[in-house]
Image (cartoon, rainbow, N blue to C red):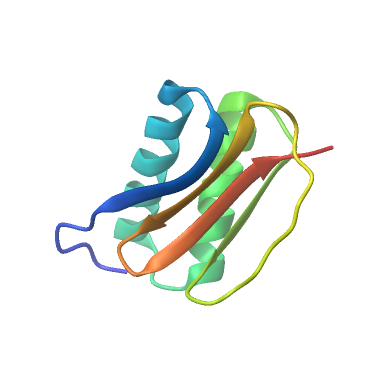
Length: 91
């Protein structure tokens, strides 16, 4: 997912501005390291587990539907470049 000035577009969020920025920065850093969507999802999930305590879930892809239950103020859905990223805390 080599970055060529990728843009983040937040589509839906129930999360503080600081956490939203952290999610986008985390996606950017992960995209520098990983080219496989599953690996990027694992990276983001582990970073948020470490920084904001478990249990976070992350889905990364170009084509997926979702309907999830999440803890209040712990949800973000955004695009980073060509991939969609769903990150939420539950459990």
